[in-house]
Image (tube, rainbow, N blue to C red; front, side):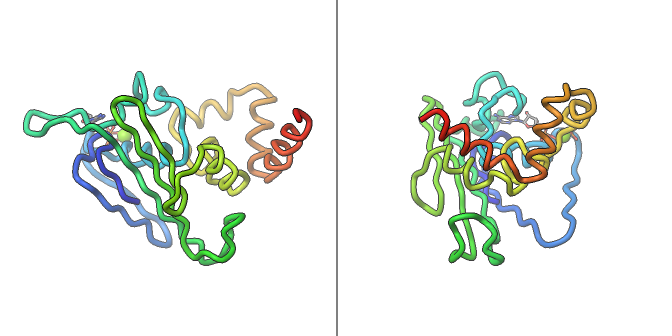
Length: 177
Ligand code: ATP
Ligand code: MG
């Protein structure tokens, strides 16, 4: 991943997630959760609250005593697709997505260097286990909500895990035409 201007990451920061387990350690307030949130964000998170903010531009580096605030945030995620798992990208060994947001609210998503819609990213990750609402990122609060949620909500979690959401969303689309 590459993060610039997102929350505490003013400097362009590269983080590599190799095979196996990666643990991020550091003192309180050093930005560990911000890394996870940057991933959630580039995957399409639309709720500022889920990112501990009031409005989306709150994710942009807001400055410190020594450093001026920035006017945009950008996160890029590089996915190893050498197993050609991602739908529609069978011939690409790497799939790159990025998201950029300016203070004035302008924003853009890119897929392999081309502008795309948030919806394209949704489609890309639907049923891969990687989507915005998937189980690949579980926050502290979410664990509780899985146990406490209503049966329908819990069902949605199982549907994502079972990989049937794609068909459901296509059906809804067809029905609405
Ligand atoms: P803990 O161990 O307590 O969970 P952490 O390593 O997860 O800490 P984070 O919550 O990721 O820490 O980082 C919090 C820090 O990020 C705070 O110092 C906060 O000031 C900073 N921060 C959050 N949003 C911004 C922003 N928009 N601009 C600059 N700094 C920010
Ligand atoms: Mg934290």
